Length: 259
Image (cartoon, rainbow, N blue to C red):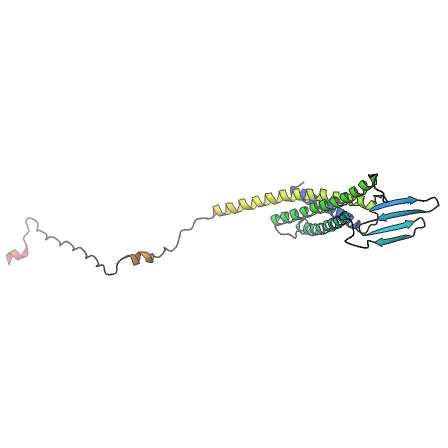
C-alpha cells in the first residue's frame, strides 16, 4: 500500500476517534449523574441523591425527582468552578480541532498544497491533544474530590460516589488524547518532510538558472567628472613625423636633371 494512502487512512481513523471523544465529553454536560448517593430507610421507600456541575437532584422510589440549581455562583466550591471552565474549554478546543481536521485532511483536498495541509493537520492534532488534557484534568479532579470525601472518616456530611458521567468523560478524554497524539506525530513528520523538499527544490532551481551578462554598461560616474578641474588645458597633439624623400634607384635619373 502506498505511503500516502496509509497516512490518509490514519488521519481518518484519528478524526473519527477524536470526534467520538468530543461527543462523549459534550454528553456529560447535561448528564445529572456526576455523583450519586442512595439512602435506604426502614420503610419501603428510599431516596436517591445525585448532582452534577449545575444542580442537585433528589428522587424517591416512586420515580418522582426534584432538582434545584445552585443558588449562588460565588458560593460554589472551587473545584466546581475549575471543572466547569476546563470542560467548556475542552469542548471549544475539540470543535476547532474538528474544523481544522476537515480542512487539512488529504481526502477532503481543501487546504491546498501538501505543506499547508500538513500544517493545518498539525494544528488540529494539537487542539485535540489539549482538549483531551483539559477533559482528563476536569474529570480526574472532580473524581479525586469525591473519593477523598468518601474515604475521609472525619467528613460528617453526606458522602457521594462516582457517577456515570465521570466514566464517560474519562473515555472521551482518552480518545481525544490518543487521536490527537497520533494526529500530531504523523502531521508533524509530514510537515517537516514537505518543508525540506520545498527548500531543496528552490535551491536546485536557483542553482540551475543561467547567469545572464549585463546588456548595458553602467554610465560613467559623475563623481569622477566633478573631480577634474574645469580650467585645465588640454594636452597638445604630438606632431606627426615627415616622410623621408625617396631616393631613385641606381641606373635611373630623375627628369629634373635633363631640364
